[in-house]
Length: 316
Image (cartoon, rainbow, N blue to C red; front, side, top):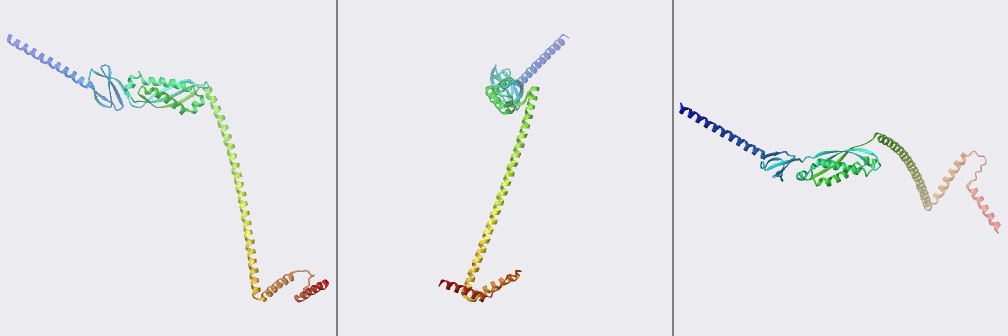
């Protein structure tokens, strides 16, 4: 019985040792696996991890699977490379002593994760505070009307001022947009009245300009009409001139032909004279006057001869 008890006790002790060894091995394996997994870092596509080794910057981890040394390396910051929006709202006073509230957005992108982590405690808070301060200063340089009309100019001034400071923090100012500019109720009513007066003035100016242009068009139309009439008269005068020239040319040609024919035949002249006498007698017969005396050609010729002889004798 004693030997059996000793053997059983020995077996139990051996089992306990095996169990303890197995537990220790499992623990060690778990620690090793945990350590290995703690050294594996899966970084998102748009994320950047800042790693320190023994308290000093070591490297930056970018998108994908990365490996660090556990217990020695440590991820101290996670920065996104995506464009970020930083809101800014500020109560300010313009150059003409009008209190306004301005709301805007600053779009930023981290260009250097190391500088963004170590250059400033919180780059988003720093940019927001700087934007508010810069906005207050820029609004103090301009009037209310300029703030409304030159919003793009104000955006550009803010972007330049913020960009110079943000560059030292590894951050780039992509753009600045003033989303809203609001004033008090009394100022708003005054602005509405002013805009109404401006619209009325503009309407009067447009009406006057339209009437002026209409008068100019009418004057131009009248002038064009007069020019056309003058040109028509000139064309008619030219036509009459050409007609008279053509008629004179025709008469000259006719006289030249008659002279040519008379040179060729003496009877041609007698024919023309006879033709003219017939035409004259025809017109004379149409007259209703009773005081008409028809003298034959030969008698008229004889009387003409006597008149010539009489004048000759008087001279003697």
